[in-house]
Image (cartoon, rainbow, N blue to C red; front, top):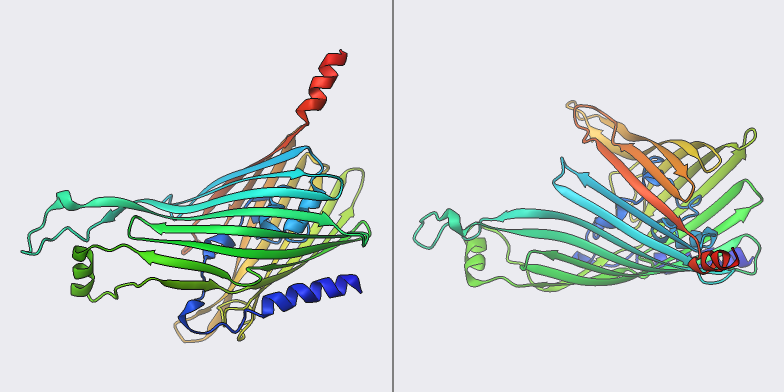
Length: 370
């Protein structure tokens, strides 16, 4: 009953923000936070919220941080999208506080650099001056502060994120945002693991401000573009439900599978189940591994409907594959993503690292004894 009450509270908080009205809650707000971190999870098509048990839990499911047993874990990833135009960087740490609680910090940046600014290319007399072309960067930043704790109910852990979001487009526009995530994980026996997370549980608020000079405003007006105004943008809650099953095969060989359901509350999306106000997007993944040394992964996700020339619809999906290897305290993961239709796919090779650090005090004590 305690578990049911906890899950009900998470869902109630998330659903309270579903009916936000007007332009304050556009679709795909802060969408850079939906890309995913860690090649181990990306290789399983983002089916990760239930089985995650390392530093990447700060992003996927903060309640999973209670499974971090090392003195400290560090995770890092760099990825490039759209033929290297967009850069995605991730860095995180997780550290147990005591036997029942863990804290973590996650940093994410998604940005495009060296964008040409041609708003002053043509002066008031119609003359073209290429020396007036400058460059700027557009970047999205997220800072996640995580906390997780084991509950008195056996197998149950809860966690949450407080996140700060900073977004900017050169010196022309910037915003600061704040939000909360709430999560729970429940281990049932040795094989089953269930999870629920409500991202942006109370809606995340981004306050935008713009700094446009007179010449830029004039350029916007002459080209028929709308002049932006300072305002507030909301990111509505997303509920993710997950179930993971792990089975030992022989000796240290195992197989683990997971299925997740993303419940988007910002209206009808082009996903597998398209309804309003909630659309459902599933992810499925499987992992075959040998202890902590090597793992092979595969997954399918990103279900979308496309229109054919005859106006009929067809369902497409995105398969991903990956591999992970471990060397003592270092784990290297690789994922090959977006391997669908070769005519439209933009292939991405993703690498990520995870480091497990030992308590330096223990090393010092051991050295002293020797």
